[in-house]
Length: 180
Image (cartoon, rainbow, N blue to C red; front, side, top):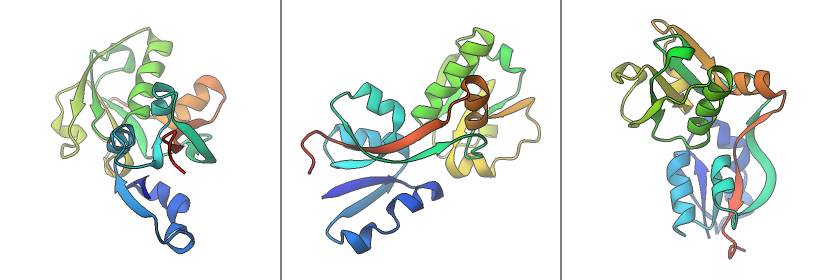
């Protein structure tokens, strides 16, 4: 059996013991967007995948209550803006993201009634290499990106909680219907 896990540090608690308790399982590490694609194409049978993808694939089964979530600041999912948030016209979305890309758009629409044009930010590019008004970054890139020089920076986990009062689930364990 092949399963997928997010390549970032926050997935370690979800997979650390798997080699010991299920040595026959092959773990494939990748960014969330690629894991979702792999699960959809049957390249993996289960994985820690973006929560938005479970909504997009109603046949997928949530197989655990273990997840990547926050009740506030998460530090690894951020929106960096060169202009006031209300004035964003072009939004660059981290190519590795699915849930956070949608989350940023939801928050911008709810707060400012805007729907910026979107473009992709390739994994090899930093926020500084994008000409977009604002950039969504996840994982190590979000943690390591300096905030200096940006007009506003949102931690999307914190902003979701402020907006809804609810925790934000970024990724969760899901499986294809035929998985054991």
